[in-house]
Image (cartoon, rainbow, N blue to C red; front, side, top):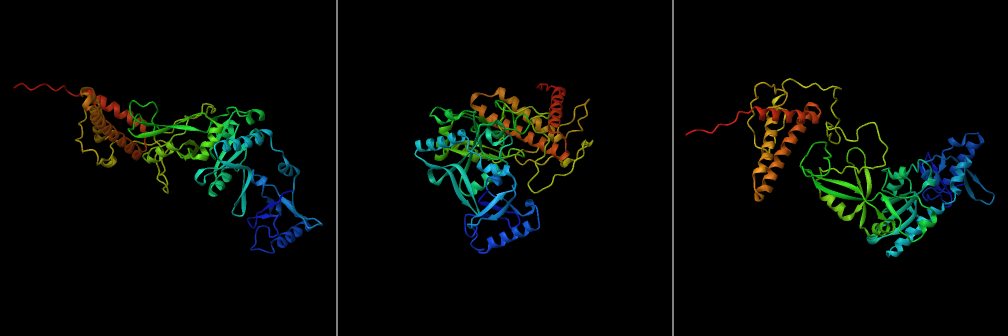
Length: 448
């Protein structure tokens, strides 16, 4: 039995504990719904077609459990599950490990000077939110801890995203903790994970380490000295990037830091998928101050099973603006013999360059002369680095980065316009500039 019913036709919750079913604007709602159920029962209509579902534990777990109503002789209203396994889901005892986590969360919060309570129900529109442990933090901050352990099933709860979104709309920051790897690798909310431990280990005051879900952000400049690969799939783009690194933290410290606002949730869409995790408040502030064009790639999970496709995104993938449909492309893009002169957009930050004549012995008609000139200018600025002193090195490095960025932007625009593989265009361009440099005649000094 359950006290909350979801009416699939009226799209409302019915709280049988209330005389008005929690709908004071509909005083005769119970009579209408109950007479309708009696009408269905008299005509042997299946329970699955009587428009009533469990609106409590079953609905929170993403399960459609059909119900029917009955009225006891003492006037008690009851909603009964059609199947016994659905009824058992309500009476299933909470595991000792789950209870130990609830007690540890509240104890850690109290040691930090924060109040909290377990199994807290919060009104949310016509329904409510039930939180395993709710911690009241500083500045009106409320952290709602949900514990999902190995006893929750192989697939886990299917309504995590909806429950986390409902909590966030009601001013509760969702914090989900688990001991299962497959739960922690999901991105429907900010999951944290610890090792699978018995209840007596979880309950004691020893160190309980969080091994997944908390990360540190590395901010770096994409140049030749960078330790990370460029997230755009090019050699070096000259922009600022940020890379998350997994970092361990003690569970008690995480509970207190989230309540104090020192550790905050982050969600980001690097390509097509949102990644959610926890970072320090300072890292999130720096991330918000970063260039909006900078991307936050997902941190690599060493335990992720191997896949058949490459982990890197395609380098020729166009950036389609929101609201626009990408133009259809043929399976094998055909490169024209002579590109139009307007294939490369004018770069206002770079002065117009004189097209370089094609050297004899090699046909360079497949690349625009302006594109070759931009790459030559970048290579020339790079060669100048070896001949400058320490005082002028920073100035020359800035000029080199500007020229390299102009060349990379031109390569991207050309490959996108022609629907070609950007990496192949860049390789062809570098081969062309090396060929031109090898065939350039050596300048002879003039004799007076």
